[in-house]
View 1 (cartoon, helix red, strand yellow):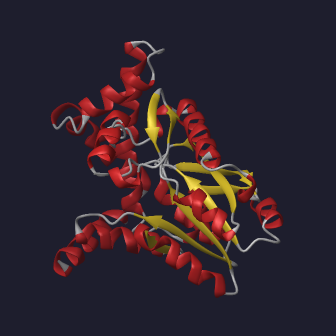
View 2 (cartoon, one colour):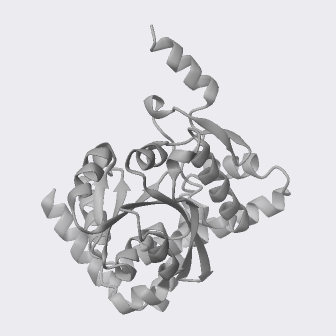
View 3 (tube, rainbow, N blue to C red):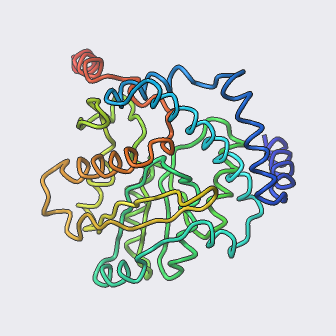
Length: 301
């Protein structure tokens, strides 16, 4: 597997040396086979768009679908560029606004948690470490089943100086970070479909009854972490900007699940603003609440 990793890294590194304008030509060329020939998860994308935006016409939904696949191809070549991107270029392409205000708000806080989504180029957000070098930055991640690709993404995310924390190790690692001198900022991408056993809370999201991970809220209350929503916008091709939306400095003051619901509403607002930039190929509603209730009943015997 290490051999596969090194071959992949070498080939992708060479490809990443191309200027972005040529990589975007590659993206444009990739769109046709992905959309028209392979038709990668098109039925999934169409079904979810139809269910999420019933108020839009069929023509509008199919336009969003095409825009999404164009963006998805851009996302792929933008990730490839990460193999050789310089710090200066990364900071031009992903800008974070309100950093000084965040520093001021965190003056008396040890921990800060960031709610993220698979929205715009989420891999670029790991470059936050460049903007906050005095803070220990990290992100929670799910292991990729293919070991070579898992190693590649860990290397790409780690190059900015942040730490990648396995989801199953989240609480243990955060508790150990209490003892270090630096403040700690951790990103939680909490919009994926949970497994049956992690479906503890349901809320309305994009016209669906939807289960969300509650780990960020639960751990924030344990360590009294500030909570922000990371509001990402695509300014133009290859350029993004982030605005930090403060949710609370005092999570313990909120009833259970209220902050998770707030995150769901903020993410939905972002998606409705620029719907083509969410990861529509993810089967977000593969498990329904009715199926979960049945599973829960069967496994409680």
